[in-house]
Length: 143
Image 1 (cartoon, rainbow, N blue to C red):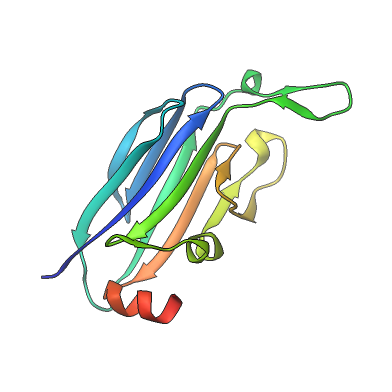
Image 2 (image 1 turned 90 degrees about the vertical axis):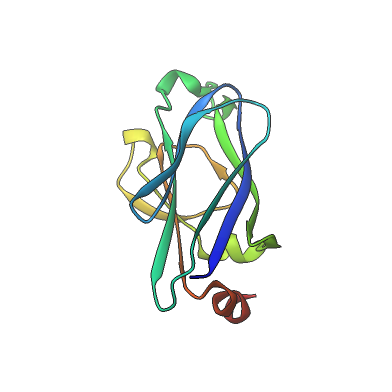
């Protein structure tokens, strides 16, 4: 069976935050992020004809992590940044942003929404990224 991998860099800006990363139903990372960039990577079986989903979940962001001024502008915030998503060392760049769906509810202050993802998670929620095996074929069709 062929193997494939994904990797990305991430950090929490403004203070530590919890992140969980799953591939399908298997947790591949769970822990606290700091201000320092770290790489999360995972190798997996590349199964032909199988739809796979990577989920990146921001957890435990609290209301006091965001400070708003009198005009309603955010002046201090804790967020998770994600960059340089790769499959088998091939940088996806904008393709990752095009296919990633960010589901959240403004930390309980709004309805559940499916939003576009631009590289920063500011609310507890989940980014879902779906792809199919074989990975090389998916890359050819989407790059």
